[in-house]
Image 1 (cartoon, rainbow, N blue to C red):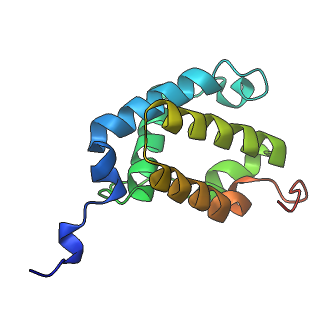
Image 2: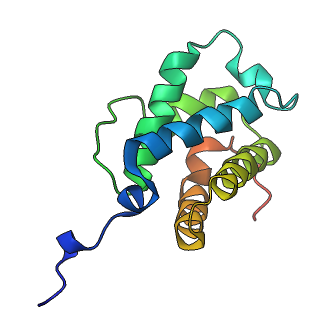
Length: 131
């Protein structure tokens, strides 16, 4: 029997699919919304929609179904003037949640790589530390 690509579970499937992503998003925002450095970015936002957008984006990152139809990362984040330090704080919260939920290390590493790949779309020009 040969292994086909379809027989290899995606990271999304490995961590438990939609229920696991939803749990991660809930815990993530529980942390971010009480972080005094980050909470201000979410003032006045529809957090139900915000949580839904992040769940859809994280699903795609993990190899699940792509149902995201929202704005692109740059379009949504560049107007906010997000500095490198805040991007790193957000990434730290996300990685802590993944660890807390027992997400396998290789899946965490995949998420860390994607965070590095999309950083320039989120962090404001001129505030990158070159990390």
